[in-house]
Image (tube, rainbow, N blue to C red; front, side):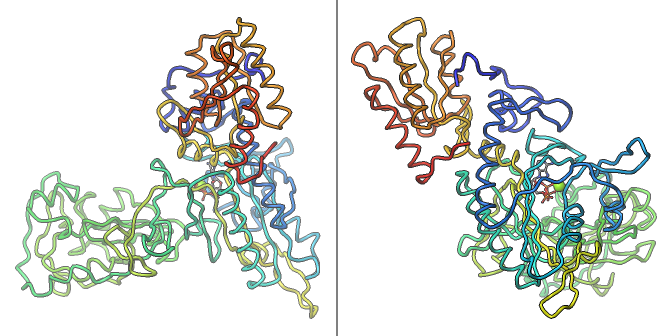
Length: 580
Ligand code: ATP
Ligand code: MG
């Protein structure tokens, strides 16, 4: 491609709408443009990167015996009503009516559609296993679309759905998909970790997320520094449940009410009362599937809503509103506690509060806290559960080693679904003994656009993108320093022809721009290799070959450059020169 003809509108300024690096750089490098909130157009340079990831995904899916289909984006409400998700999915599901007043939605995921297809076509165990995938645009009316392609409303996803005869066969398929995902993200050149994950609204028995490690990630993962354990903090269990054991030797002090005017936060109360936050018990009031529930956790820990929802076995868990809090405690939020509640509601405490003595809680009265609260004497010890988030002070749940918390971007998610959807939708098959049984399913997603964004989030510097070779829109850029100089331009043209004939995707910077502009753009675009055709070509026929990632420069004869480029690409892609 010739830069002079390429639709590549780069920006010098950092666009104010962008918060994270990948979003800024994708706008600046002319990859995407925003149409509406969470809805983006892909420009040629951005689409090339997207297609590269798609191609790797497609190759690995095919290799793992999945077959490509393309399912409709517009889906009838009836199907969603059959699984009960029409009511449950909430406002992320964009619903509308067609001209015949029929209710429809835009597909945020395709369990319903694929299971409908398969229930009509698959009859016998002989047709199984079956694994179907698509690479398609999804729509989710996200409450807070942000960070460009990272959390869009319209986005490209690869989604696969597998059908097996039983759980054992599903285990085999699941493992195959797990391995395929590892190959995909390895081939994309990314630093990633598969982690144990929560199954969320899709449901099911087992699930792993694939996380690209990056400081700006929205997820936190707990990784063991000793063994291979890694899990989303949403579900990583805490095993040292009876910590803070120095307390039992203390004697119980008399209960006291103290004034804490306007102090709602743990830190404020702790510093006012001159105690450490681990002497406080935080009291949070939730609505769990419509019913109020009180949750207690030690002041220095975070309550984990996912663990709490799982423990309670509820689908919807949200913090209660002010009115409910007043109703339950008799006081405004910030002053709740387990002693002297107005209303008797279910109370769950994290293990960390069980061994506390003489602790501080809200007094269920505005501007007041209680000190020297003790279980048994002042309030009954509630039911105990692991409902706090793991910290770096907790041991690894698997080997007892040290836990390290890292930020990650979820680029893929795989689930064992079991028979949840097949039973609801009546997707049965006849087994080898002629018995009718529900299909055992799995589902497997990859955010294609999010993977490109995550790759940039992980690979950039202050000058721009540093694309990993396998997903770079071009592998090489030839920067001709002065196109008016015939000798230079001629050398650029020859190199361009030679690189193309070696199947190297090349951008020839043949613009009438100053050298400085060309260098800046090359850095911003992040093409892995750059050949600079400048004065040297006239002196001794040589050019400079620069590596974007390392900044390493090498001077070599122009005619040796194409094979040198080819070699480096081969090296970076493990021998496979991925082409579109
Ligand atoms: P998240 O927790 O980030 O909302 P999710 O659990 O809803 O993700 P899945 O339903 O498992 O996501 O979807 C599969 C993959 O699709 C995710 O791993 C992610 O890479 C991608 N994805 C999900 N939502 C979005 C979005 N709004 N924008 C871009 N990619 C997305
Ligand atoms: Mg989501």
